[in-house]
Image (cartoon, helix red, strand yellow):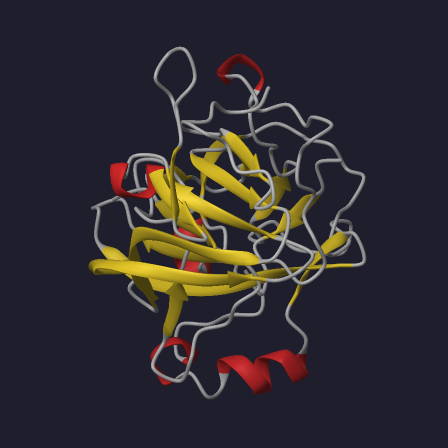
Length: 294
């Protein structure tokens, strides 16, 4: 299901972890199986979204926009963050808003008043930019040549801390839009489509896992990643296993150690790591490099 959603309490791919969000724009009508709020009573300045399912791993490039059996579904509690910059027809930035969209009961919704009080109000850098519903400024909506730059991030189920920062670590998945932002014009429906640039490492049982990565912080209201130096991550995987997400362009993340044994992760036949998935049983470690699953 691709729910069409409003822009509500919602230059580069994040290096360390994540999905890339492909954002396309359409002035036409879209699927209407989940509309919020009721467009029959809402004004036309409200920006609406058509959000596709989350993609699976090891999808081929030709089918990466298609939901597959192994696709990870959006989960309740997932949050999409959106930054909207509104420009006049002289390319002058007039105003900037930030909002959040939360997955709840199989649908997307804006944040509740209680959620805003708990997570937005204490965040000084964000609260002056935050809007529960984002609409085109009336001074721009009817003027030819006005436009909006839309930045989008998915940062798991995290909220920023009081300093306006969200930690980006290998045990969360993150989405971004390619080319940093996309441009929208009044009256357009914004389509969100996804493909998977990360590699997923699925460890099935308890063990000690080590690998290098670039851990970062994502900053509000700038909507920018603040990269840190490479760190030696040490994870103690729980007994029921856990997934970790590796930067497919970072060669340091392609060599891991499980209980001290070094394991090399191989790309596919075309040399790609994006969207690849690797499952490892710590009780049956491979004797050499491992190829991705298909």
